Image (cartoon, rainbow, N blue to C red):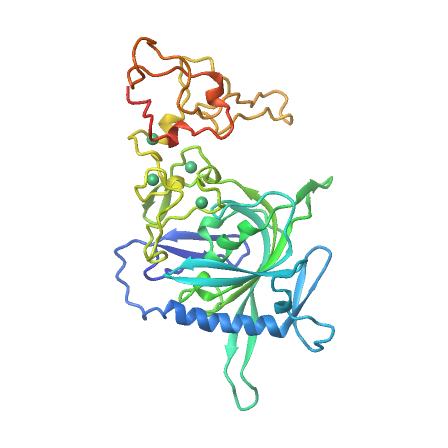
Length: 397
Ligand SMILES: [Ca+2]
Ligand SMILES: [Ca+2]
Ligand SMILES: [Ca+2]
Ligand SMILES: [Ca+2]
């Protein structure tokens, strides 16, 4: 494990091909290290190297989306990777602007295939195969001119575990949401067959990778751009509220609302702008209902009414509501036909502010004279759910 100085989060790459996870660094760490390089200057260097690489290499792709990158030896038959920039068809090389460290990174990624299933959020879990190399500029010697080399450092062909995109390098969490899963079928022996999944190649400038502090267990040099080919097989929705860290261990305390349901502006991304190293010029967070700086996906009280989301989602004990859970799901849930002896159905989702009759119709609506809930309050599409409704602290009675 390596700590990235000045970073709230540090990144760990387990080279056994298992997981890429992050932890938290205590703020009182006073370890002296060399000053970090300037982010913009380093990005300019990385980007020049990446662009040179994209122009000097071509790809071959198998039917199963295994990609090989090779140096161009015959430009007539080997179109450069750069030649796919904004192509109308696949493969398609795209650029994404990523605001981080007070600069705007422009990150190249190659879409071999988009996929046909669902896209992860930038904080969801992914089941992904990948292969990683780092890019390095080798200075001129007496025998060789200056040139770029790539060096293999890690590969996972048969992933079994979910990787949390909130805990991996930013180059992954920003770009995976641009791809979709495919379909999965299982062989007689239980092994999976993945089809039509999204597949691509990430060209990660070091600022969106490990920057000055690659994992000590890896061979990656400091400030190395990274190249990952990957296949997105499946995703897992995650729910990230926590109670901070204790001795480096994340104390999880989810509120029962998945991160993708807390993406208020629906752009597929949620971010924690409180980290001023990552976001020195943070904009107003569009995914922070009460505006207290804690984004909804990490906020135990999204609407700031003093009552936790968890409390607000608890089903009343005296009502004939359906379902196994103590808590309302975000939306009604259908029974799972694979488990005929268990009825998982939840007929009621998280309610909106009630719209039925007043408790006492002779008096105006107030906290002590609320309207009654009607069935539509639990099911209407697009309703503003109570834990996000700043106008109605209905629990305060
Ligand atoms: Ca949540
Ligand atoms: Ca968002
Ligand atoms: Ca908040
Ligand atoms: Ca609340």
